[in-house]
Amino acid sequence: MAKLKVRLYVDHPLGAGQSVPLGRGQAHYLFSVMRLGPGAELLIFNGCEGEFLARVARAGKRSGELVCRHRTRPLQVPPDLWLLFAPIRKARTDFIVEKATELGAARIVPVQTAFTNAGRIRRERLQAHAIEAAEQCGGTFVPEVTELQDLGHLLDGWPAGRGLMFCDEDLAGGGEDAPKEDALKDAVPGPWAILIGPEGGFAPAERARIRALPQARAVSLGPRILRADTAAVAAMTLWQLRLGDWRCGEGG
Ligand code: SAH
Image (cartoon, rainbow, N blue to C red; front, side, top):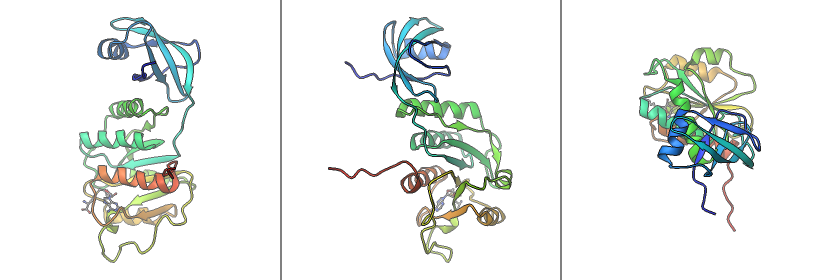
């Protein structure tokens, strides 16, 4: 059998025999762009019930219908990791949302910090990027992208049991503040968040406040200053390997 290539996120309950109506955008994508016709098979997921094999029952210009056959994969939820980042220019913010979804974030939280350049975000657009990334990377879960939140407010109500991996550019380089030991040495898996600052970095008062939070660990991402989008990818990689659901293959 030919490999099924098309994967589609649908905001609809799934189950064997379940009919799934398609909206205009989905019909256009499946029938005009991907050229699927009645009887064609594809994979669909809704972010909470796993992935199903589905068949095209009706293919119209502006609408259509799929019918679920059987479940092909169960829901695979990522570790309870939030990615907090200060939005930057549009294309780089899109990149962060896409990569955070691929790398396994449970929640994506744009934050307003002292030096955040962007005063607002288009949440719906960023959420669509997360959905597209999940479709493309074979994920069955779509992280929620929240509205822009004020970092100060978030810190005020920071959950007692959630660790905060604070990526602090002041720890880059070989200065006095350079880390002497591994900041995540005795960290344990569980609810966590990663915090990445904006292009301008963190303000001194902000930095002091974050560091004062008992749940916070100030972490270095190496001796070079990374751009925020690179830092987000590097931090998630580090966290997933140390505390998340990645296992390096042992080969053989
Ligand atoms: N303009 C700042 C750099 C900001 S980089 C300066 O020159 O100091 C954007 C964000 O990426 C930072 O706020 C931090 O969260 C993260 N980051 C970049 N490089 C880092 C490093 N080497 N260690 C820890 N965090 C880093």
